[in-house]
Image 1 (tube, rainbow, N blue to C red):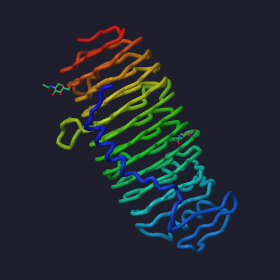
Image 2: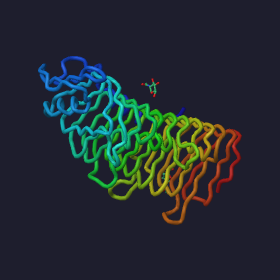
Image 3: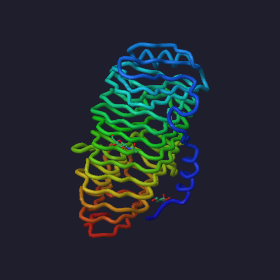
Image 4: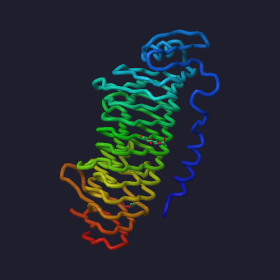
Length: 356
Ligand SMILES: *[C@@H]1O[C@H](CO)[C@@H](O)[C@H](O)[C@H]1NC(C)=O
Ligand SMILES: *[C@@H]1O[C@H](CO)[C@@H](O)[C@H](O)[C@H]1NC(C)=O
C-alpha cells in the first residue's frame, strides 16, 4: 500500500490528543442518573432534579454548570423530540443510550455558535431529523459517537449558517440512518480518525465546502444502495481554498466500501484531495466517479467488481483536471469520458481501459 508519510505522521500526532478517560470517570461537575421513569440530576453533589423526564433532568443539570465543567449522563432513556443545546466550554458525555425522535429541521443534540464544546461519548438510538447538529462552532471535539438509528441523518454541520473551524472527531459509528451518516458544510480545519457507516441510505461521509481536512478511515457497507451517493463523497467546492486554488489540503488515509451505491464520488468543483488507499468492492454504482473536480490523487488500492471507475464532466462547470489515479482494478471498467485535462492513469489488474 502506498501511503503518505506526512499524513500518517499527522494522524499519529493529532489522534494522540483525543482523550481516553472513561465515560463518567473521575468527578463530573454534574450527573444524570437513574433509569426509565425515575431520573435524578445533581450538580456539585446536590440534587437539582428528581422525576420521570430525562429531558428535564439533562436540561436542569446543564443549566447548573458553566464553561469548563462536565456533565456526565450515566442514565439511559428517551429524550423524545426534545432538543438539548450545549453551550460553549461544556463537556457533555452520554454514558448510557439515549433514544431520540425527529424534531423538524433540528438535531436532538446540538451546539450552535459555540467554542470549545467537547462530546467525548454519545450513544443514540431512534429516528432523529439530525442526531447531532452544529454550526458556528470552533474547537468542537467529538469522541466515540455511536448511533444505531432507524432513520434520519446522523451528524450534520449546517449549510446556510455561520462557518466552523477546528473540528475533531475520533470514532464515529453510525448504522441505519435514512440519509447521511456524517454531512459537513463550511469547516476549515477538520480531523477525523474514523467514520464507520453500516446500512445507511445516503453518504457515509459527505464533505462540502470543507478545507484543511485530515481523515483516517471512511468505511461503508451497504451505504447509498440504489442511489448516486457514496461511502465517501466530496461536493460543492469541497477542498477549494479561499484564494480559489486547489492545492492539496484534504488528506484521506483509507476508503473502504462494500456494496452500496458509489464508493468514492468527487463532484461539483471539489478537489484538492489526496486519498492514500481505497478498498472498494461490488458497488452498485461507480466504484469511483470524479466529475468536474480539480486536483485529485489516489495513490493506491484496489477495486473489485461493481460499477466503472470513471472520470467524467458535466457542462455546467469547468472540465475535470489534474487527476492522478494508481489502482488495481479487477472485474470493472475504467472509463474517461469526456477526456479530462492532465489526467494520469496507472491501472493494473484485468480492467478494460477506455481512457484518453
Ligand atoms: C458500532 O455500532 C454497532 C451497532 O450499531 C455495534 O454493534 C458496534 O459494536 C459499534 N462499534 C463500536 C466500535 O463501538
Ligand atoms: C497535473 O496534475 C498533477 C496531479 O495529478 C499535479 O500535481 C500537476 O501540478 C498538474 N500539472 C499541471 C501542469 O497543472
